[in-house]
Structures are given as structure tokens and as C-alpha cells.
Amino acid sequence: MIAILLQADEKKVTAFGHLRFHPVYITLGNLPFSVRMNSANWPVVAYLPILQFNEAESNTERARDARQKIYSRCLELLLLDLDVAMVRYARKNGEWEVT
Image (cartoon, rainbow, N blue to C red; front, side, top):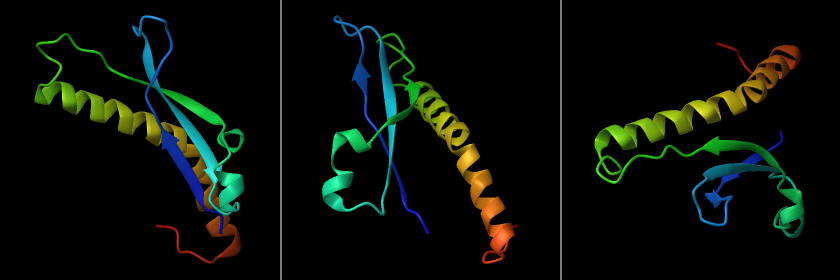
């Protein structure tokens, strides 16, 4: 079994902070701690968008819901291939029941 760790952090990509995104990093949890904590072992696998709203809408329930939905959908798409690989592995070895 291989443990896969993901991390996302907000980054600004312009000098004035107008463009922001969440880079998603990945590493293997089975690596020794000293190796895993080296930033070179956390490659970026995706950039998730950050939805921007005007000041009046920024803290509304609608804005929070939209942010959560886009973030969740992007992660779902990012992990889709990993999910397919896990299902294929389970079927091949017969260790897990695929539903």
C-alpha cells in the first residue's frame, strides 16, 4: 500500500497580488520523514482557481458555497485517474471488493 499526501496553499502570482491560485503538491507518505519534508519532493500537480467576488458578496453564503464547490470539483477531477488506478489494482489482485 502506498500513502499519497496532498497539500494546497494559496499563492499570489503577480507583484500586486491580483492573481491568486492554490497550487496542489503531492508526495508519498511512505518516504522517510526527512526526505518527505524536503520541498523538492513535493512537486506541483495542479493549480486550483480561487473565485473572486466583490467586497459586498465576498462573505455571503452564496460565495462560500461557490468556492467550496469549485475547489471540491477540481480536486475530484485531479484525483479521478488515481481513483481509476486503485479500482483496477483492486480488481487485478482481488484483495478489495469493488462496488
